[in-house]
Image (cartoon, rainbow, N blue to C red; front, side, top):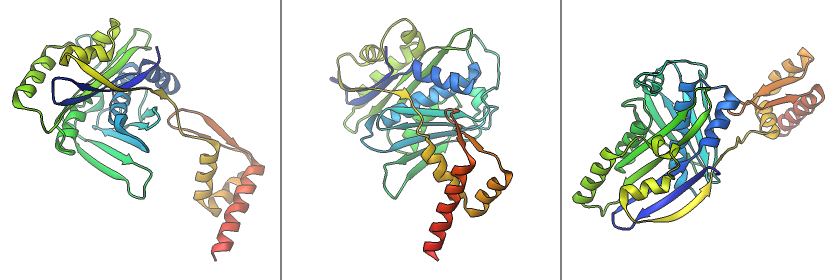
Length: 295
């Protein structure tokens, strides 16, 4: 089954909801970055969270940045309007033993920090807002951010189930948001239902689809959209060369003096790019030509 993202509308309640199922995406991130179990659990939740945030995108991308002061360090997760996801953990090898048979994501992330959301719609202006972390568990922090910073009362559940060999068994989650027309009894119903459900990975690992879980919460639902998501990095040789040109003439001259090819590794996907001496000379010529035309 391919990974996917859905938008749904409950037929009898004034809420909107999104669901995501992405075990292959999270497993690909784990494999590329050699993530420890607690690191893949944290990054997987962040990838699921940013995928849910991207459900309304028609263009552009969203970056989710989390830094709670814990041993994992900074976590970045990015999603674009085409369903492409990527992410990284600053300290991917951190190991913390399970506590009560659960990976201690909150302890690994920490809660003495912030969650930051950057929305880039391809325009001149980039929109950015943030809030404090309240638990480091990511789902609670994302719901708190949406409720306080974007003034959209929200509930969120995210989960990653990791096997004994460190691989990903399943991953996914949902985001529910209150519409302005929702009445108090509807909110009370939702709060009751959410207090009764099990962790999201319990459902996904038993074969229950994320839309079936949302149906269990709300009753009759309408699926407005379903689209594929996958791990796909936006890096390329062209972007690497643009970054080298941006460094300027002196940096490129230093690289040429060393007399060996330059190797650059993408932080997100670990793809290696090698720029040989001949290409470095052409990039330097390009920089000099641009500088000459601007003088």
